Amino acid sequence: MPHRLGLESGMKDETLVRRAFLKGLEEGKQLRLLPELNVIKLGGHGAIDYGREVVLPLVEEIGNASSSYQILVVTGGGARVRHVLDIGADLGMPTGILAELASKVSEQNAIMMALLFSSYNGTRIKREDLLDLPMLFHLGVLPVIHGTPPYGLYEHPPQIGRIPPHRTDTGALLMAEVLGARSCILVKDVDGLYTENPRINPRAELIKDVSARELLAMDLEDLVLERMVVELLRRTVNVKEVRIVNGLVPGNVLKALMGQNVGTVIHGYDA
Image (cartoon, rainbow, N blue to C red):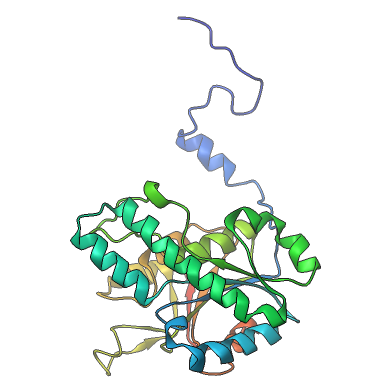
């Protein structure tokens, strides 16, 4: 057998899939670039699509809070994403194409929200700017970014159907994790996670506190957040929980930033 040419390193000759090797990497401490960061995801369907009546109070609340807290605003897509997915699916577009189409809408919302935050030094940033956040916060910037993860054409095939499994809730969590954020807050238009859709069944029960494992075991028919967030939360290292709050209620986002229990908390660990 010919001799392999290589560089001396601890991973020399590793396949990078050997289980014992991978297990050993869990012991190393990960860098937390921004341990005081709070990622706030403004849902398109749950907030932005309501227009000025909902959006402008949220801009004021988050903008004022940005003077005391490091905040990264992440935008979702909303109704226009649902429309383009509907058309794309009807035309037979594969999941990767649907992901490409959906990302354009959340990007449009990021542009609009950055402009609305301009009086609070709001600035739209792109994925390649994320590692510049320490400098941007030092300059007093309130960064705004769209939440669709950049899988694009490489989007993972979903377990069910054709809708891209990694959307803007997932993007917010992934950004919070890689930056070592203090919190990840998903702003919706309901009081939190329910056992069923409360608009369909008014008797649905609000779940205020639950672990990711417990939630997956419930196997609920519908969720207010992407299932991928719950699955990833079992494996995240820096982000230990995700909070769901009702952005239609003034003051909820600030309370969540302060660590108060408003809405639902999903833990990555078992209680």
